[in-house]
Length: 301
Image (cartoon, rainbow, N blue to C red; front, side, top):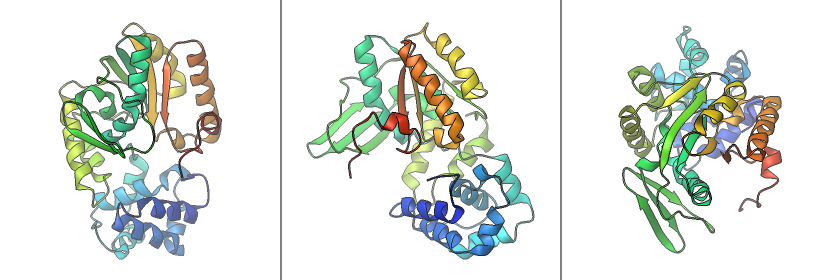
């Protein structure tokens, strides 16, 4: 989804993404895209605050029933007394989906294998840092040749198409940290309640997984640096080098940067990799970092 493009198109793209995953959010997004009054209401918000996940979560936070009809969302927005807008302006999506680790751990395994060292993980945009614990889960990769299972802990299932370099062991993590403009504390119950509100209405399995991830992180709260990633990341990478092979990673974060800052981030990371300061693992939509995507194999269709 292009946050800087046409607003109705943004919501239609989101509806296509939600299809098959949330009947409620698909209907809400298509409703917004066809509703001039709601689109005009959204256009009064800053660009990055118009994103469907944030708007829908804020409406739910203030009582819009979900699953529920589009009329409930419409009433929550157009009849807002200021509280929904305040929530939109004061909060962020910061979705902390640990299920993404199932796509990241094979790459972490390659870094650990090639270096022969434990990993020092640095996450860009970690939210509450729940994805900094890849060594605390059991992975179930299911593909045409059956199922590969690795690790101990809550299950993280993942469907696999094509060859994957499954690691022999869950990579050892010697150090873990992250940098975020607005990090969340796993010890702040209201922040964790907000993360749960961000889970889509019908996805009870994700809610259960989120609660388990919060418990894991709360037992050993992560080291999170507050600040701009472009300013803070080089020092954090240098700090991590003392603990193991540094891996900088991120998932569905860089899309929130303006295009010029995306290019600055890519240049920063390519410089760190060229200096052998770290490995870089990126899990973003193909159009977010096109210079990086161009170096990868074509995505399956």
